[in-house]
Length: 122
Image 1 (cartoon, rainbow, N blue to C red):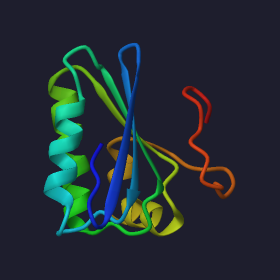
Image 2 (image 1 turned 45 degrees about the vertical axis):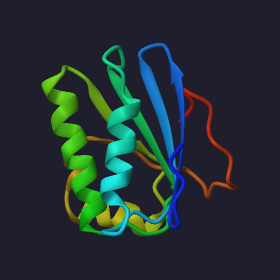
Image 3 (image 1 turned 180 degrees about the vertical axis):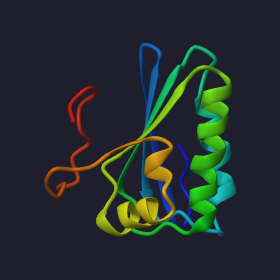
Image 4 (image 1 turned 90 degrees about the horizontal axis):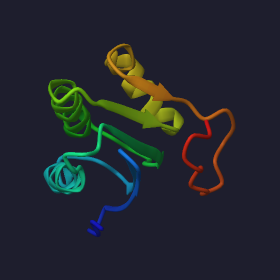
């Protein structure tokens, strides 16, 4: 589990799916640490990585580069990367950069109260 001054990451496994939840901002100051933690958490048997962004309040271009790198790696290995439940500001940033055209981004239907959704429930 990554714990720094700006973010915390929780990880759980379900079959060939790895679920990750990031809490805190994703920016220049912590993007490399987050990327390293994500890459070390993805096992060769994991075909799908689902990253919950419901607790990420801010993300800059360094955060975006994490997801572009992960998407490229997933596609090279026949896998899939899914981002889920971004807060409105992060969601707008992902749409503005058109990352939503390259990967699945599951939007929250209503504001989250800090609950981590169960696998398979969108």
